[in-house]
Image 1: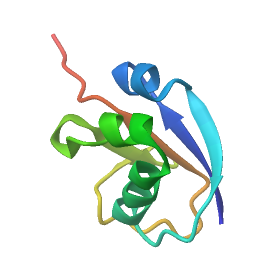
Image 2: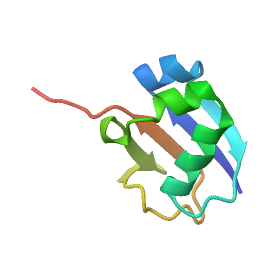
Image 3: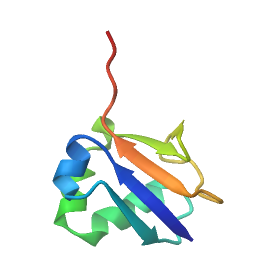
Image 4: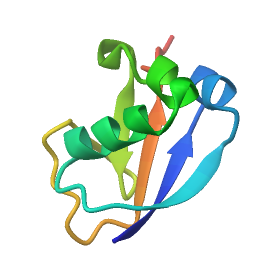
Length: 83
């Protein structure tokens, strides 16, 4: 399947791009993260501490075990704080 993968804030800075389209066989977000980490040192550095990363699948908050079946977009971003 083909996915748009979006990166926000410091993740975008570490990876060096805001968005990329990738071809994947990943069944879950966790599988996708493993594929991204294996791509290069920039992805590996950005996604090395998943406790500091949140994810959304098709603009809905998700966790690492969320299935990607039928998904079009996965976004990675730091936790949000409010005030």
